Amino acid sequence: MKAPQLLFVFVAICVPLEVANASDHPNVIMILADDLGYGDLGCFGCRDIKTPNLDRLASQGVRLTSNYSNSSVCSPTRLALLTGRYFQRLGLEWAVWYQAPNEGLPPQESSLASILKQAGYTTALAGKWHLGYEKGWRPNQHGFDYFFGCLGGNVNYFKHYDKTNTHDLFLDEKPLHTKGYVTDLTADYAIKFLEQMKEKPFFLYVAFNAPHFPFQGPEDEDREFSWHEGTRQGQYVLMVESLDRAVGRIVAAIDSNALRDETLIVFTSDNGGEKLARNHPLRGKKGTLWEGGIRVPAIARWPGKIPAGTATDAPVQTIDWSATVLALAGAKAPSNRPLDGVNLMPLLSGKGELANRPLFFRRALDPHRGNVKQQRAVRLGRWKYLDTPAGEQYLFDLDKDISEQTNLIEQDPRRAAKMASLLDQWEADVDPPLYDQRQQARKNRKNR
Image 1: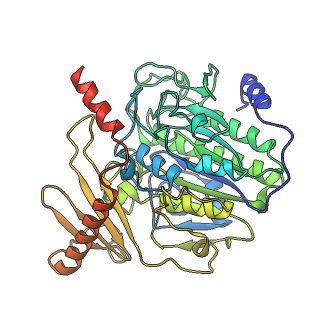
Image 2: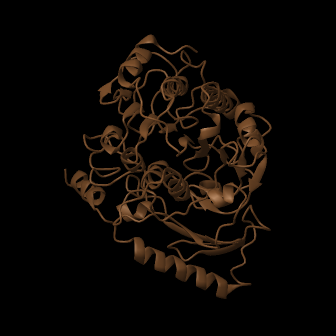
Image 3: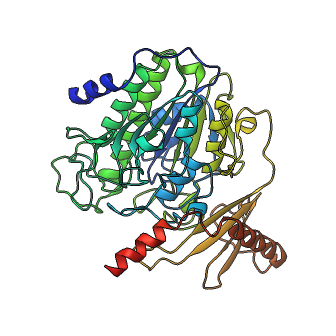
């Protein structure tokens, strides 16, 4: 699909043609799918979806088979990625609601983009933001030099409005009215940005809506529209294959512009797959802390730095990618906002291993529905502990039981108790959050 000429004109005006001298630090492209299932790529065992471009990317780099999103829903994981910290520290524990004020990434917070910008990087976001609607909460106020995409969690892929019937497609601060399938438009913008980034280091965050609902394939513009209805073969497969083509175009733009050897490309998802996804062999789905809700595919490519055709099963988390990018850029987070993740390059390069450290998860109550029970989980090495407010406790040996079918709580209660204690200590550290805007906004809505 050819991008609308209007979009190209805007990009040509916005992106500077004269750039600074090249830096020793690599360019970074962070590509985030939305609600992609763990088993929805060919290189992760899928048989009914063709993903040749992502499979090729995996063959050129490393495949991470125990990569975890920080949350089982979208906004909190995005917050973790852009701050490098557990999202609980900021009090955002569920998805930002449609057009809701004072929800997302607070204006006073620094972000990955703002830190990289200070380190000399040109920064751009193509795609989904989902971290705030209001002025001060938007991408351009959080360090992104350039932004094209939607502010909210999902839009009609062709008509670009959200579930409140509000138009949600922007070019920087201005609403953009154009034609096109959102997956293609996102790739078009990313590629045009790349074509003009020859010398100055850049950070490009490409956050696709696909394959999040509404389930609309690239040929579905005239099909009867529904926000939540669809089938795997009728829409979902085509959405993932369209995503794969879009990623392939972006990678081709890197390679054809002689940026291949100086660019780290990371591909992953914000949480596990929903009802049409394939999370096999994992249990559960989006919105839960079973493996299917939080273990997501990840691929990283950096020729000459990351050995091709490799794989690792070491447990890693979204916040580790933030720490990795900042380390490669020679940039540091503010001293009063220390990172929670670790630099993955020793692991990715095959030159080292990660220390055995716990990875923590909490899925809080959905404040908008009030019918989703809280869960907590921690993974430490091969072991995973999960509990609920109802008193249910689970212990799994993931090396032997990736599908979480055999609860070992009675066989090893001492290990479970130690892991529960780790969770308690972690919660004491991350709570209370630094800001209570979300809680106050919720109270204000209830009092109206």
